[in-house]
Image (cartoon, rainbow, N blue to C red; front, side, top):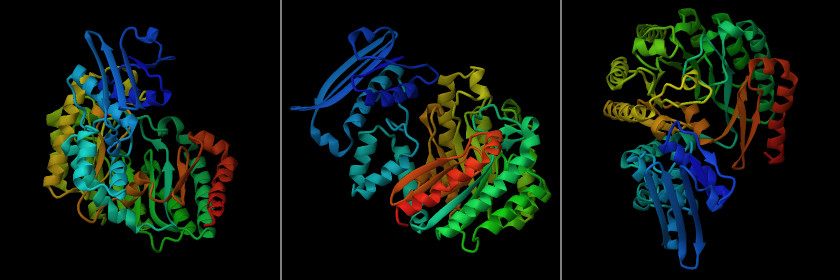
Length: 491
């Protein structure tokens, strides 16, 4: 599809909307808005203020479908949405008419829909106006609006706990036992890169210590710790102890609110590793089945069984872990509604404190996408049904949504939502998604986000473990910018 607009600032939004309806097809941004560009399949969009109001023009030519709209609407519409969003609404309607589909998040294509609703609330928009602004003007379905609205208020008490001197610590272990077919994260398989794991850990511990020194000098207060990946439990029990000892020695851990370690892949979990995690002071772990269907597990490249997941959760319970998160993914290869339903029902039986429902994001660099064997239309419809079922059952079972985010190229333009039993919200998840406070990040592929005076500055580490090891002096040099940023804002 060729995307055309006389205003370059509209092209990105128009392309995102088009991708939402024609998922898996390639788009091309036109070089000009000249009439000669209107060949083959194309979408044209433009909007501007005139003396009469806001003029909106949209045109779609797709195979046998052709439609043009040209309307002028009152400037009163601007109390609900800016001009770009007004244009997006009209384009959404044309694309919807062509495809006979109505994606439930309407024109919203960004990562943080909950934050948009929160911004409107903070500007004084009352509930009825809010519903008009998002359901009528942005085309959200009522159930997605209600989900985001409920999530915003469930997050609020967590956001309000944070103070100007609060921060969270992220420590990344970008290694996995194998690479899942849907994965595009910067992680290395232990089979191929295991020989550098010990060198990586040695450098990581030094970065943790240096980061702790900066936090101490700036008088920052550590609130949450999150060790993620990759799969942190590819480390041995002794290596887990080395890393967590470094964290405990480098930071003031007396008043933290949460300490999460991703145990992740059940095939990397052992009792001695769980004991090391428990002894480190972790208050929350993730054991992530993704599915309880063995055929699906094999299709995505996982070497554990569904029973392995259940057994490892049982072991964690025996060792005293009372805050366990489990991740599942809707839309995986070979998964259908009935097998996904089996996964949801199976997890509800064992009753973990957190269940995070992800929607498959089709990443270009993932093996799944490279094989080009995705039946998008059928996948989108079945995945939407899966997500609806999971949300219905979790709400009926007493779980509440406490954080929500979206990724590019998610099937059906859907979402990832964290559900939990009351009092078991994953604090770090809220802080990283809401960008509430500073996140000091250590490890390859991680990004520190310094939040001072409502401004967010990013400091990226090198992506790959070998780059991280080879350029470690530069890693520390960049990390020193944290102190400079706080000092520049007279913290």
